[in-house]
Amino acid sequence: MRRGTRAAPATRRPPREQLTSEESGTITPLVLGMTIIAITLVFGIVGATSAHLSRMRLLDAADAAALNASDEVSSASLYDTGVGSALPVSDEAVRSSAASYLARRQLPPRMRQWRVAPGTGAVDGTTAVVVLEGDAELPLIGSALKGIGGTVHITVESRARSDVG
Image (cartoon, rainbow, N blue to C red):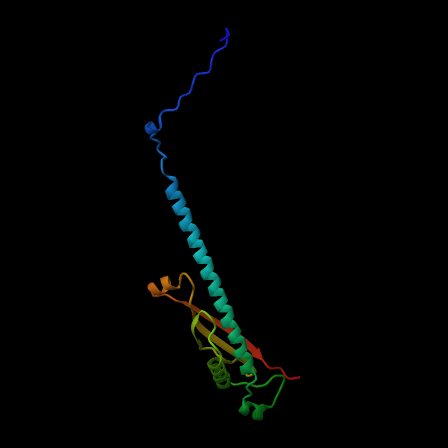
């Protein structure tokens, strides 16, 4: 060695068996926790998407039932007041038309049941309002919801009017 220069102190690592770090093995709980969070997010997103698709299918059926019901002319109103700017409809005609339309139509995928709900009828004598209620079955989380006694209940409303002229 030259004069005036110092050698760097040698840093020796202790043998592996002498390492007793406080952080030894803590990556496993972190990875497990992150995996659980990721799986929960995936299940939640799939469930929310399925519920939204079920709502859209139910709304499609309500739209079609309302359109069908708006073409059901109320004979009594037709002969009493005639045809104005729109075909006259009655509460009973709208309810029966919507119920018969749903009876003919196949239940959408992932829907357990559907029914015509209160509020279905003729608002102003010319506009048919159809309110449908249904219970959706969600993938991945549906069995967990059944286990706790829950279900996804969806209600939609659609309006249709048959204008003349």
